[in-house]
Image (cartoon, rainbow, N blue to C red; front, side, top):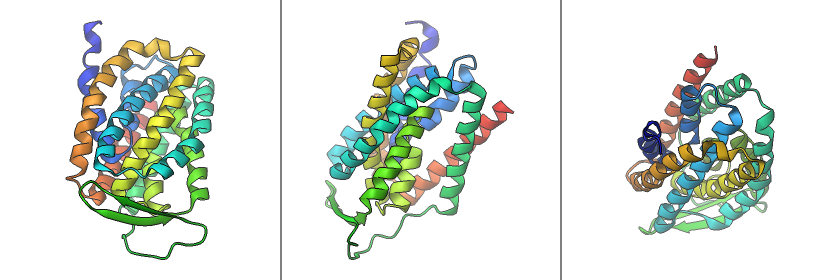
Amino acid sequence: MPLHYFWLLPLGFVVGAYGTLIGAGGGFVLVPILLLVYPRESPEIITSISLAVVFFNALSGSIAYARMKRIEYRSGLLFSAAAMPGAILGAITISYVPRRLFDSIFGLLLIVVSVFLIIKPGAREEVERLCPPNHRACTVTEANGTVHRFSYNPVLGTTVSLIVGFVSSLLGIGGGIIHVPVLVHLLNFPVHIATATSHFVLANMALTGTLTHIATGTFTHGLRRTLMLALGVLVGAQLGARLSSLTKGAWIIRGLAIALGAVGVRLLMAVL
């Protein structure tokens, strides 16, 4: 392994820790860094590397969240099934997107999501409500005894997950930066349950996108870089899950918003 690849190991650790903490997989941090460090690489190579790293990050984080009993599995499986077709289509579509257009789309998306979270940073208050006829009721009991009761519209959840699967695979970001706000603000998930369930969905979605990249032959060009990043995120994700227990939900959302905005602006500056 060439020495110039070893700097990716600590980068993977940071991406894994922060991505797991906010339930976003870390791809939204990794992709712009790779775009800046490897300006001559095609979007499909960058996204294939990032998506594979997101899988290892989400897998490690999901194991940690499973121990905490924060994952709502039935919803996670439902959203995963909806997201997988979108992930396949996104992985195939990326080869037709020019690099400059890709950078612009990615930067704008980050800024839009950041502004939304800054305007509406808080989650809905958890209170007992009657479950509407078209909603699915959920109860999640964490390992520490905390009980969460909420309900959501499964049709809206699966529709959004399909879109998230396509966009996340297209951009190589895993989709957590979109999925977590949707789970919290549109589907009534408590923040900590949203981050854990989102991570579970990310693992399935990123694996689907990565297998598609392998089938098309794109992934082989970034194998060594992916290996170094993956080693870092596997460890970092465990730390991120532990830190989530010490972090309030509102601060998780604010941290996500600040990171997205900063990265989006930096990426657009590079394009312009």
